[in-house]
Length: 169
Image (tube, rainbow, N blue to C red):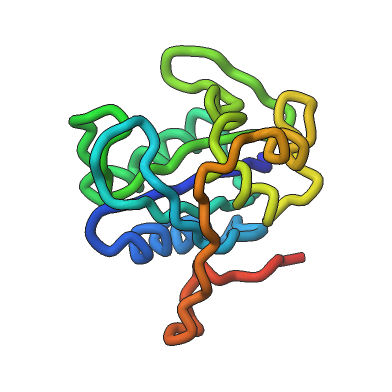
């Protein structure tokens, strides 16, 4: 099953939290985007987020993938106190090829992906032909008001950083 994940963190060592997700999916990783800095969404006063998108191909069902994402959040000590508040790690399923769901546990595609530059910009980087609800992600992103998402330079000091992975065959 081919899927797009959006990861985010704005607590503790955010790069390390994102790298842990990349490592967890390493055997199934097609491509990881650059890391982007993003102003917080939802009006809660907090530090900027670091965000990244992953394109993966996993031998899991959608609900098994959801469980894996939630387990990674628990391992990072994610606390869900404040909606859109600060977090050690957020791992969202944005899109699954050929699959849609709208149930209490899982909604795919992500219901607010089309509104969020921090989701669309990294996704477009790793999949230039991406489509969301039958519309090219490139067009959706072009029609959004800029939200201050900034691509960060790769950390030159750590060439083994799995968040800097290149496309794989």
